[in-house]
Length: 261
Picture 1 (cartoon, rainbow, N blue to C red):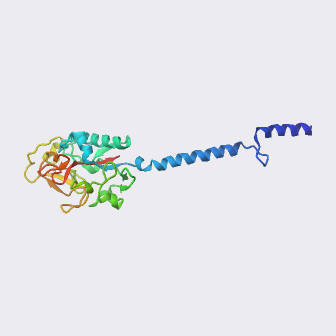
Picture 2 (tube, rainbow, N blue to C red; picture 1 turned 135 degrees about the horizontal axis):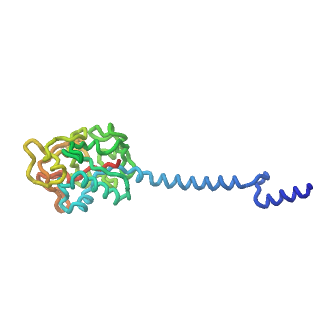
Picture 3 (cartoon, one colour; picture 1 turned 45 degrees about the horizontal axis):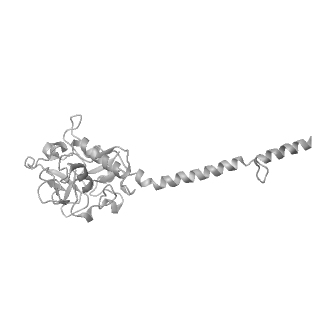
């Protein structure tokens, strides 16, 4: 009987025993699990910046690709068209499938009521494509500059993660908003007729289109409301911002800020 028991144990060990005589099955599972977890963690870390990508200032080349060489001026296709510009640019550089919104106010939304840019963009946090923090929440946007990564917010990055200060005097970003991100004027001329017009004639006297500064300049520090421009015409020619009265003239190219929800 003892001989049969010993023989049976030898058969079990032939299937796999460790040095203590216990089955090695658990040890094998633990080893595989450890290796699998390591692979997943490494992948997650490498994709972290792209996964958090939720803010950019549209570059001149991206705007020209979607609007022509002169830029869009004030005709962005309305709020929906501006949102699509943001979405398509984000998708082209990162494959993003998030919901993107242009930081623009309008006099009349889909429900017939005014639209405030600050109400369109979710609650944060927002990061550039390199994973640098732009702002943790709405409160973090309510300053001359957002309160995120100091380097990033002093020259708000485009979709590639680069600032625009070294490319020329291209800091005017269309917002149509006051410093709190709310509609600046209820006159539709002040939003280029809710971002559907390039009309070169100026809005009614005293009403102009508000732009913010993607980087601080002598004419204004605030990223949302730096100063006014007189009309809605495009302002790019041969890749340069042109002298004139249109959006971005001598200060930009009609770029917009984009946020992901």
